[in-house]
Image (tube, rainbow, N blue to C red; front, side):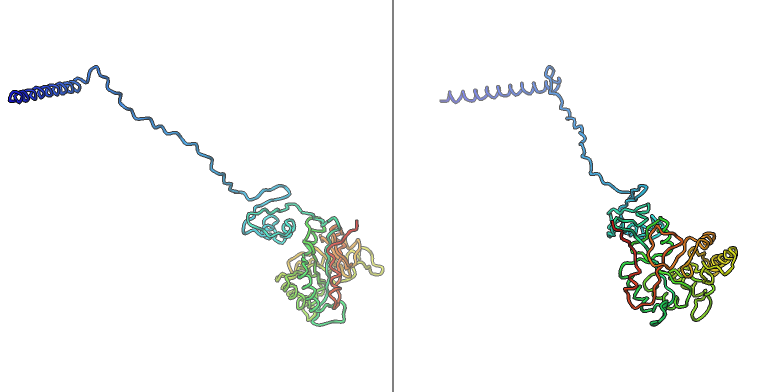
Length: 372
């Protein structure tokens, strides 16, 4: 037993020596590896960083935003615009025609639709139907001829009461009539521009005071303008006649424009007994030429239209008017005026004293139907 016990320490000692020897060999091997660079042993390749070259992303095209810098397209005959919030028919007429009063041309062409921002509006650049011709007829312009006015009713058929004149103007206003000037009428007769539909001209003859005291306030109330045909010998201060200051005042208020009615209001077609033709022509020169000259001196405007006294004329009268550069003249023949009428024989319908508005309505022929 003691023998066996004696062998155990010896064996343990040998095992310990063996382990130490193996450890020593391992340490030697490790030292050799690090000191010699591990000759004969290829170290694993060094890891290089993986290339991360950026691939450009293919961008989708952005939606195209159309900015309309020029809001107008134009041809020789029309302009088509994209309306802005500030556009009106009047402002467009001012821009394209130089006169806002021609707004009706654009309005009618666009069927009187309200202008809406960012919507198209078509502007005719050339006269649209300047003759006023339609499939069933043609446009005419009636010219109303007044002389005097009174506060109350009068027995004189040439004197229209203030009350009836007011009712007549109300009728024009409420029924869509357009009161135009002689210049607009002249453009129509000369195939330049058609006036608005339902157009009418208001004229007053001679130069009586009631044109200022009775007619002018009513015209002003409804925004209408009349042509005053004056014969210059009548214009003088007085209770029943206009003075030059009266005429100038009405002009300044925009109620009237002034044209000629001769100098002394004779029948221009009548020659005196045994009067030589040269003397007759000289009288015409005086009545027509001097009237024009006096009006120009007194008012600063040169008349270019005449209302024939008594509505009568002949070739000699027309020739004299043309020498003085008149553009047209007017009779007192009832009826409207289409574009093809002669400038020097235009119709005017006299408005007589009547208490029936129907009599006035009959004078308003603004369209003449043609039966096919």
